[in-house]
Length: 213
Length: 213
DNA sequence: CAGAAAATTCAACAATCATTGAATTTCATT
DNA sequence: AATGAAATTCAATGATTGTTGAATTTTCTG
Image (cartoon, rainbow over all chains, first blue to last red; front, side, top):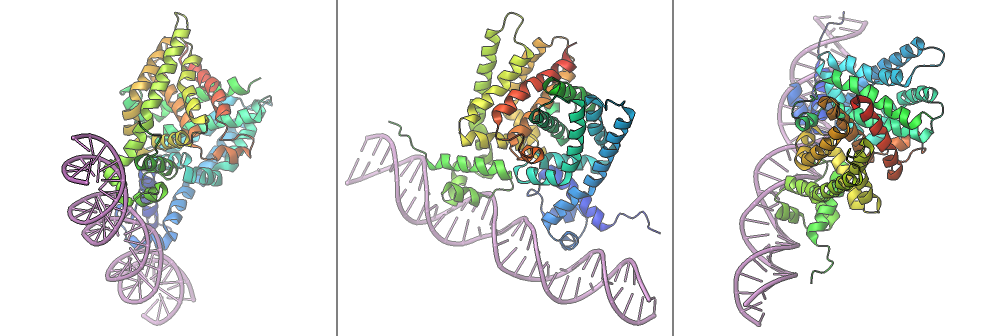
């Protein structure tokens, strides 16, 4: 019987996830990870080889789960749609809603993970390679669906629109507190539901404006 | 007569700008900066106090220029507009076009600077504070203009729309190479003109969809 | 319980880090 | 040319970094 145990290996991943999300790869020391996880310094290297291995393991852990959830959401909205296929709104909703389902239910780990992905996505060192490695197959599937919903779109326009979506999503989940300061409390970065409800129509309108001909 | 000299202090700023943009604050050592600038290690500390002072100096140097250029563009589009004030498109264009004017003319420094700002903007450590420090007054001026162009908008909606704009802008100027890989060359991250021409209508459509009631 | 394997700890390594005080050079002004 | 200030170099500091091999403990397996 596998008990409900939180072993050291998972404690290390959780600590590294939270720390990398806030301070970046180079901003976190192996000692700080060990200290936060309440674990010996050498244990992280033993389990993950080296610091880079730990970073990759953190990224990989939830990527698979997230990709499956998003694919399931896309399949569901496809089957619910008529023979014309799902609308742009429905596709974008399938892309965004899983983030909310995971992150909103007081699961700190998922929130840290989204912060980390946000930082990775806009980093020169990691953005091009790691995002491609972990998320490209999924994104291509969504792009196919969007092409069907916008049959007359120029491919380059479609990619740029997705890029803008990715940017808006990235900054929103980065949780930098910027919108709180700028709006002086009128808009709150913790209000992920509000962000989600606004991002879907905002992005959908942009897609249609550029790609619906 | 002030000669056209590129002194060591500027060489340090240029080197730090390029390195911080690519590898982040903690990913760059003072030694690497000195080496890249072809300057003694101790000189950076002498001129800027410490590493953090160097980072701030890099950010500040172009922030003032950029803010002035953007304000001038906003003033111009205001005076060109009728008594109803400028349109949403015109305001967003005034916000984005200066980036192109600076960065496109083979000025490597500006391109590095935009990459750096992109990274700062989506970083937890710096995003909330530094962006506020250097760009908030300017952004508030643009928000005022947007409020006039969208008089029935809910303030929270307006702030979220700007946040999405900021995210799209940030990722685009981060130059991670992601769109190149995802699109397999159909869309190129170096094509800043193409990105700009698409971002304006994309974002404007989103603003109108959420804030035009 | 015996023995093997995995997990964890301990102690230390060499390398690199940012910073600084003193010495030296360059520069501008007289 | 003399003088004082600014700029630059040199050399060293103590602290922190990631990694590792050996020793120890825990867990698993027969």
